[in-house]
Image (cartoon, rainbow, N blue to C red; front, top):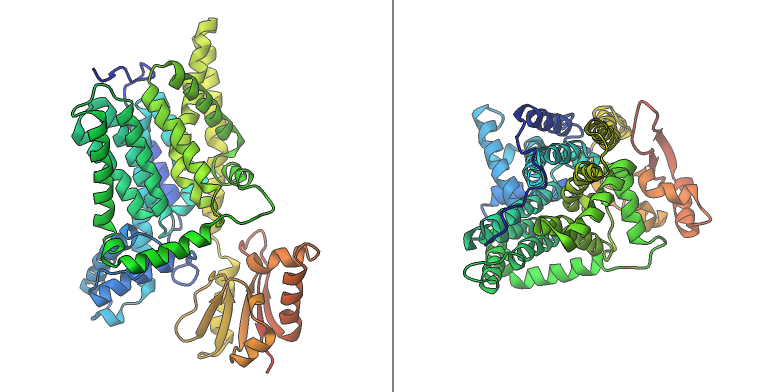
Length: 511
């Protein structure tokens, strides 16, 4: 018979008021200043999704002609764009598709991403209820204020929807184990397929329903058949939302090979295991919550070995470990790549607090003392990330150096000018002939003049390391200094405590 005693604690009464406070807090943090930067200071990958969805709407073709992402995020934004266009047409904003510009679609897309973020918090609560109500509230509360998740729920990127579908797979895998039916495992497999259709590495989520399937006994029509059905459902869901991986197979394979080559590990100065660990501390959890998550992971390993609740603990522990190991094999590194494993870590942190303190009962420590300790650890886990999220939202809401640079360019550089900008931190309107590069130093000053470039916009996020440590990056330093000294600096914007952002330097290319 399928294991039914899967709860960790007896506190199973859901507090609707507490859950409402958690969800409202999550929504507030994710919607705060969500409009900032539109349309000129959007995140670097936002145009890849928004503009391609707009192009599909204009062309009538569902082929995105883009395989860096599988398809689900693009089709999701296509639906959002269609609804936004119809709404704008009713309101008289435009009278044809040609009149609509990409900048009009970012806000709606961002709001949908924020809603995915809030829904993920709710899923974490439902997962936490498999341990107990206090676990659920703490886990969802930590997810609600997690700085990394709050920040990237502001933008039209793939990482927040991916985190939602990975978390959904986690929940449905638990449900499948509880029910022990073929249909429930098929649902969990389909959720993993949706994760893969959002971003290729989301396919790792399939290990959760497969683990749950293999650990559920007895199971009809058998574990092997159920596992095959789960895999088939995952593949079907992926192909349904990423159909051109098959319909345009040569293009997909060619682009996938290129993408895989870009992510292949290269020799770096710092171990990726260490680097991503630093990201978890600085950008996600902070030391107290992360240490509690490690404590919960240790408790989980013990429960996996001895029980009870082996399945839920196995899913909570194994997926983040496997996913983290996968990240350390990739050359391209971003903190937001950690997002899909954060829901599991939130659940483990909650278990580290509630279940860990509950172990003290065997030492006859009074209940009041244990309750006080739980309250203290809860504050220690939630307060640092909450403060970081609030500070981050306040920074987003403030005028930045990019805002000031954009305004200066519009006021002082003539329309039609040819401008090269670093890092795509600022998107100029069509009245300028704009070119974007990762680093200005990749072009010599002679090449800039020969190409007819009139202005260059340097961003300290690109040139900063070379100027700060020229002995460490001598070639980069020399390349930048040739450009900076041979051209004429016409404006410089330096960040302050009131004006966040990178330093921006604007140069006139001397003929």
